[in-house]
Image 1 (tube, rainbow, N blue to C red):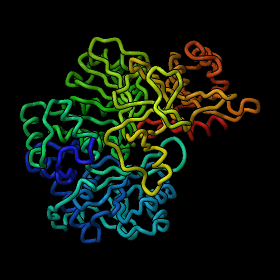
Image 2 (tube, helix red, strand yellow):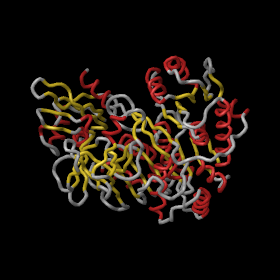
Image 3 (cartoon, rainbow, N blue to C red):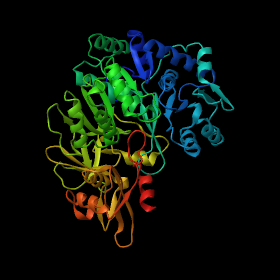
Image 4 (spheres, rainbow, N blue to C red):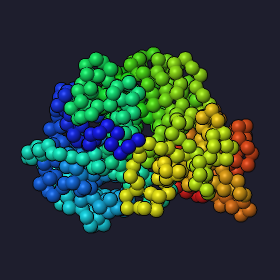
Length: 542
């Protein structure tokens, strides 16, 4: 796809302004108990943009966001877009040195943060030489020295005037990955349009619009005809997935619903589904699906009405066949999409389960035509049907690369035979019929006696044991084989290591089975459901 897929300069501030003009009283976003129309969102974002502009922010300014889910998060992202600045996500679980690393690496000049995280911000500030403006969102904590209240500067500012903008403007999505320091993935607005909006229009059979006004008009028409989604995203805004999904829903005239709590609450999610008649639920694998299904079981016949849900989409982690069946029992009308994606692009593989169908085996997907496997040594495309594991690569709209890291950019965004592929490092095989067998991230591949063992296949096998709730497989030092497999897992009732190992050996080769099993109360995952293999390795070694 070309850099300008529709011939217009796609900029998300300009497009969001078109939504606000076309449907000002339509609900744009729901966050917990708070609802915000497009008129309200646009006005507050414009005022924040005016205030930040008075403080020196403008084109190419990096604006860091260190917040839990809240209206201010979307407002500050929108304000950054209006200024042609670049929003930068910061994980609210990070400590001061990690916050400082992200902000310093990005060259952030503005930091918008929740007051309850103020102590960390105060500690990190001296380590961020570029930082000039601190804006504190009031959540009951005192104002830290040098910061200004978010609500005060918004109320005092005049709305920023609308300006000419470019699809070349960017947002920066920091991804922790599984190893090393977080990396800033740089997405241009035009590439996001190609990856999100272009796909949404094509899937709906709608001709891609050629002007922002047409984008707004189509959204309003879809909403008026009752064809717009009400999309609930379970992961928090700070992980980027929610913002990307919001963009995809907005172009179809939809509303976005987000959790208001500061930790995942399955009961809250189902209440929001019932109250707002959510049509699409987006989550990340079993880490979200399991507590959601447990919540349904607890509520029984008196639980919330889930009949509005027509689509369940999981991306970023495996959604097991078991959890799909549980969803089917509660929401037999829903189509279930299981996709493998990354902050760097995709999707790389997908699995669709229609109502009434038996879900495919866990971790079995189909590759779209633009997805290939790449030999890690020769950097050549492997033929479909090859038994040799390769790195999944996808062509199409993708980021420009990693911020200030040419080496990692060249390694992840590869040009092969004149085609650019995004290659985050997930290993898999693709059969002749397109079936993908996912093996896991190569950066955490376990090398035992020269045999490569991918964590994903061990984890999927372990979760087949009826008491295993969650599991991470890691490599730990072994005197003879270099590494051996250790499994860190949580269980619902007392279970022996031998029982878990025996279950694993039923489905994969014995040499891939764990030699050690470490039981923990809960397997730690990031708020978006992704595995933290560094934590798992620490537990295994301890």
